[in-house]
Length: 410
Image 1 (cartoon, rainbow, N blue to C red):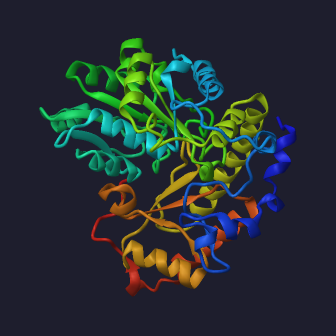
Image 2 (cartoon, rainbow, N blue to C red; image 1 turned 90 degrees about the horizontal axis):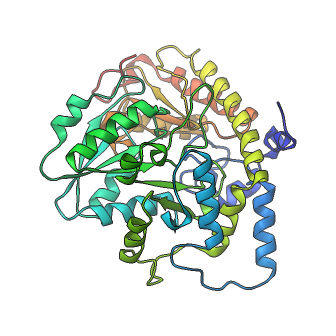
């Protein structure tokens, strides 16, 4: 079933001239002319009309005063109402505005970890988890997972020591595209409760989940489990607001949230979130904003299927359909070329940029993979994938790459 926003995701809706000026972080503004970036997970499409109108209306007054340290009351209420619709027992007092999901990760790591404390982090996963732990003086301990095997609690148990204080979750998972079930989350939750381990759940991808899969927030679990953790979220993935740098931390216990706020740099104004960004994020959760999101998801599902079908025609690749996110984590056949060299050759000789599955970005478990983002138009995606395929085919047998590791298991 379509809605009026479906037309906003046609091929001609991608504002290429503006992207080449404004889209940084490995994307259009940082690539040579003519290169198609299937890189950082940031949509190529403009934000929803209701968001743009909310920004214009607020800015037209010319009043840009300080906001409350924890965020605008209207923003916190909008977030709490949205989370309650997803089954979370939460009030506005349990929500804190932060200037990105990344900032929320760092804030919670500082709050819950002392120097030398250990935090269990999935491998592979976005590098920001281990980075945030290290910034807090903690030690990341890697728990290896893959895109479909059951979570192994025996392995998890073997990683727990007397210094373990935190378990970091990424649900849905970047880069694997996995969406964890309620049963899996509750099993992890009981495990951590019994051992006094806090849980940090990054749910920034939770708007991008494809049927028949469903998302369960940590805050929608049993009350005791929910209170033992916190959720980090942001508006860059589902609503194309990366440059506005706005997100939130949410807790089921308002008193815990108040302590976190007091111990942060938000009351000092050293840290904080633009009120204009909060106005935009509040509009994202409006009826019109969620209708735009529904159209975006229909587009993404079609692009996901387009990308999977195209990549599955390339011999030697391991390609699985993600349950969530708009990235594909593609396993590569063993060759003599390093993944980093392959990615550079693809960019330089074939005009397509992808992210290498290197420890720098996703941890050691990502080796032998590349990540491709498909949050663009059908035409740009088709051209980018054709260039990717041509680049793989152009590698002579003597240059077939290997990073010293066997291909990921099927």
